[in-house]
Length: 115
Length: 113
Image (cartoon, rainbow over all chains, first blue to last red; front, side, top):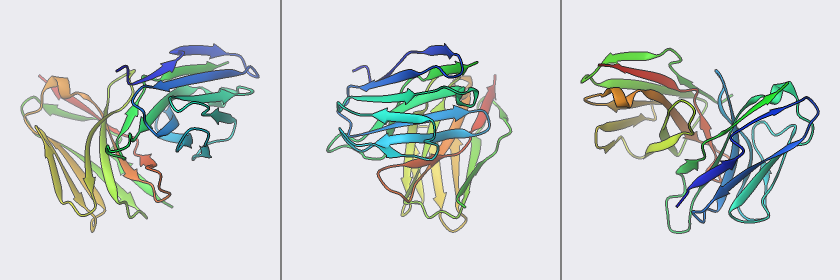
């Protein structure tokens, strides 16, 4: 199993550009999450999904959109990137039926720099 | 407001000693608490989960305690090794459900040979 994978690993954007971060998991997990991690701030939840076709806002959703058209994929979109969105983005997933619900499995992260 | 505090200063200990990391929280009544390990440039990795009705949990050289009266969790690594050097994050169950958790900022542990 590859676990949780993220694409791309690193990206540089100019202010106002758009991009989509892709997260994929092969563990048949129901829940998926997008976090951002900034120095001194810890991991903050952007959006999450409790199943295919569903999404919900987390702690810091402004400026981001998400979609979960397939159970294994969770996309994070930036429509008009701002320097404040420079961060490291982590995707995570949890809970396959019959397993432990609470453990989250994280991807390797995407480093985004917005100039 | 809900708050999680981990010692932001790095913890340096000698190899072979026991490392103890602290996670304090306020305005929370979490059903469970988790500890994760994060290495530079990588995503967090789950280590241990302890529920509110459990006082202590062990896994190999790791031990976690959970004191809901003190609103504190202690994370111990016995017989520490340089390979244990990493940042350790605690995460608390978010009252909103759906297995959402809130993470602390982490404590960086450095084990000196």
